[in-house]
Amino acid sequence: MEHLVRDTVFGQFARLVSGRRLLRFPNETDLSAQTNSTQEKSVASPTEESRTLDPENTSSNGEQKKIDLVDWYGTDDPENPQNWSSGQKFFVAAQMCILLFSVYVGSSTYVPEEESIMNEFGASEIVATLGLSFFALGYGIGPMLFSPMSELPQLGRRNIYFWGLFLFVVLQLPTGYAVIVPMFLVFRFLTGFFGSPVLATGGATMTDVYSLSQAIYGICVWAGSGIFGLELGPLIGGFVAQAEGWKWTIWVLTWLRSFVLVVMFFFMPETNFPNILHRRARRLRRLTDNNRLRSQSEIDAAHYATRDHLLVLGRAFTLTFSEPIVFLLDLYTALLYGVLYIWFESFPLVFGEMYGFDLGQQGLAFLGILVGGLISIPAYLVWVHRSLVPKLIGPVTPAPELALPPTFFGTLALPVCLFFYGWTSRSSVHWIVPMVGSSFFTISLVSLFNAVSIYLGMVYPKYAASVFAGNRLMRAGFGAGFPLFVSDARLSRVFQN
Image (cartoon, rainbow, N blue to C red; front, side):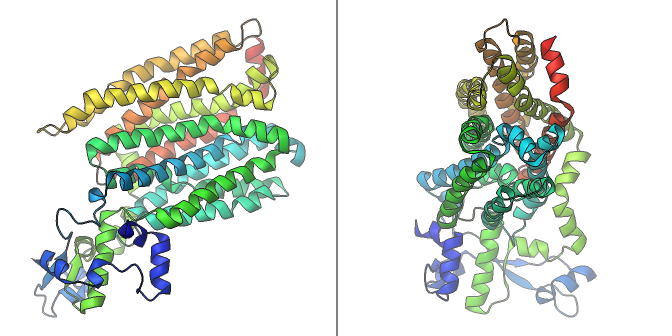
C-alpha cells in the first residue's frame, strides 16, 4: 500500500517537504534492482533537428551514443499498475466512478433550478437554460485539451485529475454567489471545463490498471455511474431547490466534490505507464549522475519538434474529424445525448404542468430512466461476460466490431421509447405510463455508449483518451444545443395537441 500512497499528490507533497526522506522509492535505497533491469540501447542516427533537441545523446560529429533504457524492474514490478492487487485496482476504479458521478450530477441538478434563476435574475427562459448548456459545453471542450495532456509523459493523469477537480470545487463559490446572469453563466462554463478530465480520461485509467478483458467491465460500470449521475441529478436538485433554494444545490454538490477531492489527494496514484517510467528515469539520473539513463518516452521525445507536441494536443480533433467511422459513431451517440438533454426540459412540462408534480416529484419522474439503467447495465455486463470477454482472451486478436452487436438493440429501443413516451404523455393517461416509456431510453444509452466506447478503445488503444475526448465533445455539443431550441412554449403546444 505504501507504493500507492507514495505516488499520490499527498505522497509527493510529503516527499517534497521532507526533502525526499519520507516515502522513499526502492531505487532511492537500493539501485541494484534498477541497474539489473536497464538495457543498453543505441540512439537512432540523428538528423540535424534531433541533434539540436537531444545533444546529450549525440556527439558533436553526429555519431550516435549508447543509452541505458529505464524500464520496469521485471514482470512483477510493484510500480506497474497492472501488477497492483485487485483491491488496489478496485479502489482506483471506484474513485473514477464517483468522480464521474459527481461531475455529471452537477450538470442535471441544475434542471430544477431554472425557474428560480429566472425569478432571481429576471432572466428569460432561454437564458436560464444556458446554465445547463454552458456546463455541458465546458465539459465537452475540456477533454479535448486535458486528455491529450494526460498522455504526455511529463504530466500524466493524476495531477490533471486532482488540480482540475480542485479548480472545479473552488469555482463553485463564485457560481453560488453570482450576482448577475453573465457572471453565473461564465462560472458554470468554467466549472464544467475544469471538471471534465475524468469524462474521457477515466476510461484510459481503467485500461492502465486492468487488462483489456477486465477493463471492459470497469469501463461499463464507470460509464454507468455517469448515467446514474445524470438521472439522479434532477431528483437531488428538485428536493433541495424546493426546500432551500437553488444555491443550496450548488453547496450540496460542492460538499460531495470536496469529499472526492480529499480522497483523491490521499489515495489517487499515477497510473500512466510513460509518466511513471519518465519520473523513474529522472530520479535515477539524479541519484547516479548517469545522463545515459532514459525512459522510452524520453528517447522518443528527443526527436520531436514543437510541431509534434502541438499535434499531440490536437490529436483529439484530428481523430474525430478525419476518421469517418469515428465521426459517424460520435455523431450518432451525440444525437442520443441531445435527446437525453431534451428529457430535462420536457419532464417538467409533462409531469409538472400536465400531472401537477411539484419540483421534488418531478425529480422522481426520472426514476423510470434510472430503473431502466438498473436492468440494462447488468444485462449488458452479462453479455460482455458470456460473449465478448471469451473472444478477447482467446489466441486470436478479435476484431473490434465484436463489441458492436448490442447497438442493434439500442437503435431499436430509441424510437420505441420516444414514440411510447410522446404518445402517452397526456392528462387522460396515468402518469406511470410515460414514465415506463422513458425507461426504454436507458437501453439505448447503455448499449450504444458502452459498445461505442469499447469499439473505439479497441481500434485506438494507444490514443484512447484522445478518441474518447472527441466523442465527449460531440455529445456535449448536442447536449448543449438541443435544450436551447426546445422552448417551453413550443413543447406546451405539442403536449396540448
